[in-house]
Each structure stands twice: as C-alpha cells, then as structure tokens.
Image 1 (tube, rainbow, N blue to C red):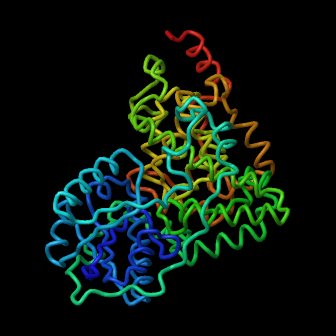
Image 2: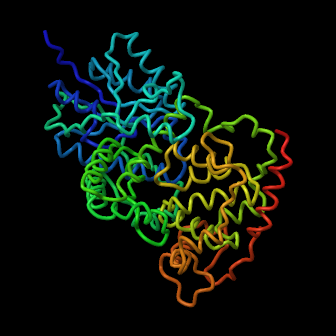
Image 3: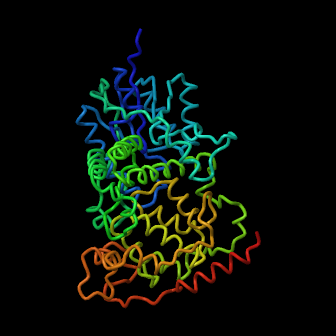
Length: 473
C-alpha cells in the first residue's frame, strides 16, 4: 500500500516555494506536508540584524504558504528533540530538508539524520542552497580548489538544472500540530530602535526577490562590470539579502544571468562570476570548516594583530568616526540600511586589518551583528581575503588607500555626503538617520565636529608593511 503518512519539510535558510527541491518532492508525493521552522541554537546565535531580518522573512514566507492552503509551524528547541516530538505527534513517516554547509549546521543535521533513521523515519537532505555541491568540484589531482580563478574555469560550463516550479498544491494534514507565535519569539529585540530605521530599506520575500532579479538582468546588468564599483550609484543586483535567506535560489540567478549573457548584456558574465564567488566561499567552508574561526593560513597565527576591541581606534571604526570619510560613510550605510556596498566592504576591512592592524575576527563579528545579508561563508572568506590570511587572498602588502579609492569610486563625494552629516549645513535624511539608529550611549549628534583621522592612510600603510616585513614566518 502507498504511504500516506505526513512529510515534515524542515525549513531553514530556504524561504521560498519555487526551486525548493524538498518542498517540490513532498508536494508531488500527494502526502500531507507539514512545513516546520525550528528556532534552535543556530538561530539564537545569530547577530542582531540577521536575526531580525530572519523574523521578517519568516512572516512573509508563512503568508506565501497560507496562500497554498498550508502553514508554517514554528517550534523552539534543539532540532532533534523538536523533530522527534513532531514525528510522534503527527505520525509523520518522513522528514526532508535542504542542506546547509556551515560547521554548526552540518554537525546538527548529521545527528538529526542519524537519530531519525534509527527510528525508521525517512530522513533525506536535498540540494538547493548552492549551484554545485562542494564535494563534486575537484582539481585534476583530486583535491579541492584553493584559488578562485581555476575554480571558476572548472564550473563555468557545468550544467545547472533548470529551477523547479513552486508546488501547485500542498496537501494539509488532518490536524495541524500546535506551533509558537512568531511575535512571541521577538527576533528583533536586539535591534532596538535601529529596526525602524533599517526597515524601509528591506526588500522581503520571494516575489520581491524575483522582481529584483528581473529588473536587474533586464537593465542594470549591462553596465555591471564598471557600475558595481561606483558606490554612489545603484549598479548592483542587491540580491545578497534575498540569497542569504533563500528567498531566491542561486540556480534561478544563474539561469537569469546566462540568459542575459546570451542577449549580449556586457556585464552579465561578471555578475555570474560573482555568483560563483559565493559558491567558492562555500566550497572552502565545507572543505576547511575552520575558515570562520581561525587563520586559514596557519602561519598568520604569529602575526601581531591587535585583538583588543576596547581600543579607541576600534571603537572609532565601529562608530564610523575614524576620520576617513570613505570608511565612516560605509559603516554608517550599514547601520542605516543593514547592507554595505561591496567595494566599500573591502575598504572598511582593509582599513581595520592593515591601517589599524586589528584582527579580522573583530570585523567579521561586527558584520555578523550588523548585516541583514549576512552569510557565513562569504563573510568569513571576505574578511580573510582582505586581511591576507585566507585562501586566494589579497597579498598583505596590497593595502587599499581609502583616499584614492574614494577619489576613484566616489569622485564627487556623493556617497560620503549621503551618509556623513557632520560638516554639512543641510545634511540629507539618510545621513541624519544614522543618529536615530545608533545606541544613545554612543553620545553622537550630527552637530559634532568631524574627527581627525585616528590613523592616517600613509601612517597606517607604513606600520602595516613594517609589521609584514618583520614577521616571524
């Protein structure tokens, strides 16, 4: 006889209906489908901004499921205990989910799968968060890639399956299990007054993400190769926010990028390469799970980075008060919008790790707390790449000069003036919003004098290069 028991679909960082392999398979089975999201330690450990953004995304996703006649069941607790309890309550014969690749998720998912299989429950994981499973891309010698360029050449002609459609229907169980109310989780508590400032910049849900993708590939992608670096212009897709929570899949982006390439859009290949950079980050995270925790190159353990977050220079960096306009504008953009332009991220990271000689983990953790598009792989690789301690890294002696970078990519200071109020007789709302978002304890006002540099570009560069030349490795 055919199995008619319910299928629990464990939802994680995949808040979409289309191109969702686990949900698609469950819908095709004809069996009752119970979508579940679990607030476990991986959720509780998130920083303020990504946790808040997750809560907003869950609300929109629950509405999308409701339109299909389904619902999103919310439970809190250790994933294994929650899922086993739901199996007992519902009589479910299967628990399916889409894979995650960070170390904490792998450890959790391995234990969950083992426990469920011990109970003869059909526990299956599906692909979908990446274009290429990390273990499927190998060098000719059989190892993993440590440099991006050959990784790109290895995957650029790989066949990526067409995205799956959303389920036409999702059969409901005879009785839905009880769940928590999302508002009771209060996932935005740590954002405090900053939530009201950031919220207007948030673009929520699958439908919005698809519209973003269509608008970008139909227009701005043509000028993306150069436009992506002009910080005052909107030359990027802005899809990192949606990709981080799976409101759109990388396969959907990949195929849209290929279509743009076929249509002769000049910047399309550059954008597809950026998608593959995300893949490369996960490739490295899966093969070397210490990437977010320690220097990828062990010899950098001996480098004399400062690790004291209480230092005046570090506090100035976090507060956007370094006296370096490009750096400060970028930090303030992040605090107001929850995002930071990618070119600006490199400048901000270089200034911290080289001009201020601070450990990259200080910056990585700050981004973990402040970015609504936080991604465990891209964030850790990006910081180690800039610092010089990671795979495929920028050489340590490549020190971005924030003055010349501003002159090149923000020549009329439009970006700086958009985000820094001090010194302007009539600052824009975007710059003033920063003071509404920050903690009052910082004691900052738009009437303050703009500070002198805590470390000048020339002074910082000389100190960084001296430390590099005199290193013990």
